[in-house]
Image (tube, rainbow, N blue to C red; front, top):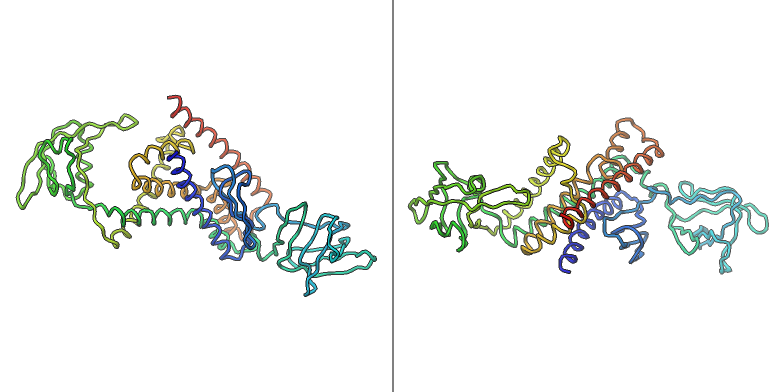
Length: 419
């Protein structure tokens, strides 16, 4: 149960911040946001606040921000269509009823002749006395149909009305907020547990490990291994991990003098069968707010670079699609990480957030990166790509992504439940 809660909190937070980025920059650009959703599928909770519906949906596999003009939410009143209109004190239409049975004596019925609910904002038609009348439509008018209500979206509030830069920023903001979230998680780790010191100084020695047996003590500074000069903790770890079961001679500085210690790293195997050496010592941590900020930035950047390098191995064939993980794999990994405490869980969440940001930036149809690629083409051409063609590309992309998700999920199930 703890794993389920941890998974929901972590994955929900990553999705929330991703969609929050889209939402805030869309609002900043003046785009109407119709819905802010966490999850897909049937609605569990829905709260209408202002012009946005905030929802939690059944399938916790992502989320979305639905912007006006992005989908097929436009309402066109065809000539001859009979509508009910409620006029406000400014002689503007504030409510439009598309159903014919409206129990409100103040509603005027009109047979539509012409209308424009986006740019000129008017409805013209024949009333019950056969007179041709015209009314301006309020920018905040609401359309009622079959128990549903929808705010009209004047063209200047629609996604497509904005500049390429504003649209691109509203899309890029999602992955950007994932990177920002990672930075703040790493920052919090630096403040809470401290920042790993760069020097090769031993903070603690586990009593049941080879380092304790060899005489290594807390406070020792490693200066040399087998004649190789050591100045940083990373250099120290690199040599030890590369020497499983191989005798080493450590030179450590202790109380102003040097001591030579013979030690053989324990051989440890990871899940892939790769062997590496381990001594059983821990790294010192420093609690410093400024260093915590630098640590947050450094970890975020280094993980971004590391993940892009991993993607490069996927392209060159060094990394197989069988090695990818979907929701099942992420859940199992979360279960394992949770066993090692809150700090490890926070670190895992930060890395996952970076993964989510980078995956969404890939130039694939239906992903944020694919949409950004179309904006790039639009900027170069000086005019947008045909919407039907772009929509078809994104549709194919969604289908392919769903197929990939099924393949990855099936691989996860086989890996973890039928090894």
